[in-house]
Image 1 (cartoon, rainbow, N blue to C red):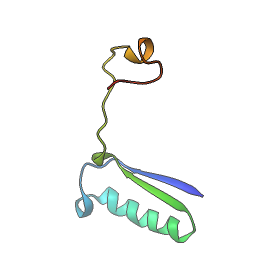
Image 2: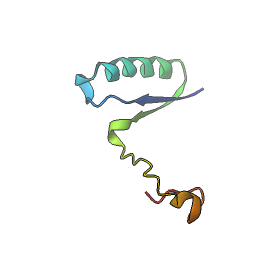
Image 3: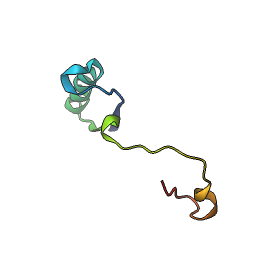
Length: 65
């Protein structure tokens, strides 16, 4: 089984109760044989739509931002 665990807490490591709980959950899933990928959203640079419509007119399906 493949599992994607997404952590959206802004706090790092020992400061985040969410991350501490998630780490225990992930550990248990791995012990049960699951392949687990963990994504920390605080480490990602996420750009939001600015409504320029370039994705519809100039580069269909791809955002330039």
